[in-house]
Length: 70
Ligand SMILES: [Zn+2]
Image (cartoon, rainbow, N blue to C red; front, side, top):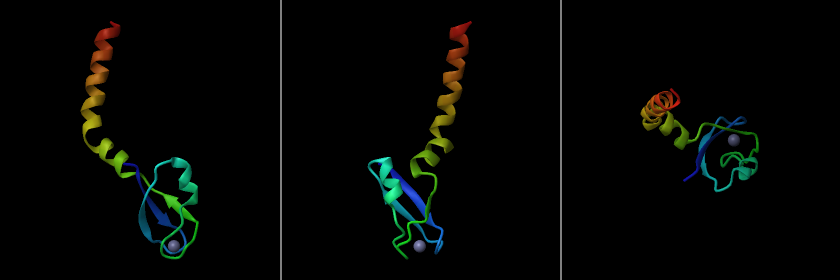
């Protein structure tokens, strides 16, 4: 599920929004003050992937790629 984290630049409130299409990012407003000046932070998905499984995936993929090309 595409959950995005936002931070309001007006009141510094952090909140999460469930967005099913990335175009909706531009329509997100702060639930606290209603400002549209919100900054999208890194998604929970991306941070999870970067921390764990993608690391071993990367190294194994690189290894098989190396042996394959030589
Ligand atoms: Zn706000």
